[in-house]
Length: 524
Image (tube, rainbow, N blue to C red; front, side, top):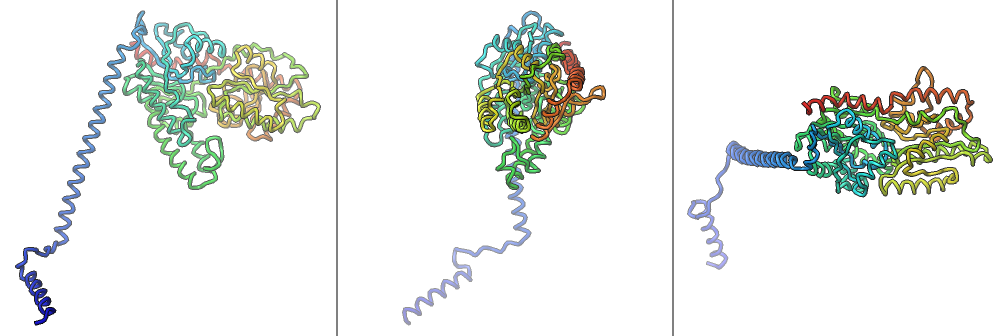
């Protein structure tokens, strides 16, 4: 037998062993479909049970951590700032206002609200959470007196927050709304560690801080909403791919990026509604804000319109019969230098107006931009506006007045013919009211608070003008400056009469009426 035959015989023998079972290695037995399914279901059940138990465990641990933190915060609160409870103080009210020294309309609301509380309830102590660490308490209160003519009858305790950078828009080039809101949680936690009041009021629009004080601090909570963090108008702009200061051209020109941003906005709007409705009392500053907050927070029974305070009594003292010198034809804008105020629209509209004015008469027209700057970002915007005025060749006709005193503001308003406002969907418009009270003829944006609450007919007569585009603004400027004195005086007088409902006295009355249930509940 050849070597090849031997190898073949050996292979056959190995095959017989496999068939007869003499080999220790056995072929796998055949598994039926039903047996396989039983084993599969068993494995899946075990995995599911493990996941459920793990989830319950982690949820339990998370809940325990929250409860421990809550106990720690409330226990620690009893040892903080004991002097606030001295002298028979009944309770403390904390205002969350990281930019209390900014000098804007929101700050007027803050200081007027505190003054109202101190006048009605002298034994209540007020606390302000602020990030203005560069200023002393005396400097902050001095600025409130200088800018708003407000002097408080009682003392205010300041809790200085050192992490305000977490709510700065510049920190979040993408997903700014979400970044700032989560940043406010960090800042809110710093605040509650600093002091836990009996009543907490978010007076600047940081809704995500409300659950922190309500759950961890056990506080009664309220809020005053100046402007919704997100609105249905913003959703519409993204959906329609309209370019704006909060919807850059890169996104507006891309259907994919617009779709992604729309999903992000809708998710954020849902979260905003969840945290916002945790407030036990919700105050809003206008009809426009009221409508949007109702859509987002869905809490109509506890939402109230409380118009912001405007110091109309001081501005009304400016005589309406005062003649403006022939060589002064001023247009004044009063407002912070923020992007949404749309100062570039003012400059471009003013440029269009000047182009339609005889060349020899142009030097008499001045655009006065009056406002406060909160930070370096605002100062940079002022620099950019000065550069834009140079590009438009109107720099000789544009004058900037930054962080002016109350006395200087009155003087500037008294010397102006037109009060200009260009912000799209301004939530209210305190500057617009101040202009009307001072006797200027208001030219405001045809949207938001000015359209719905302020520049509306009074006694069946006009109180001002509304516009939306550069051409509309330029046309209205020309109409106002060429108007006869009798018609001008009639509009100015009617506008002044209409703003009594926005006085500081009205705000104090309405604010206390809405807040009294919380005050009385805590006092009793």
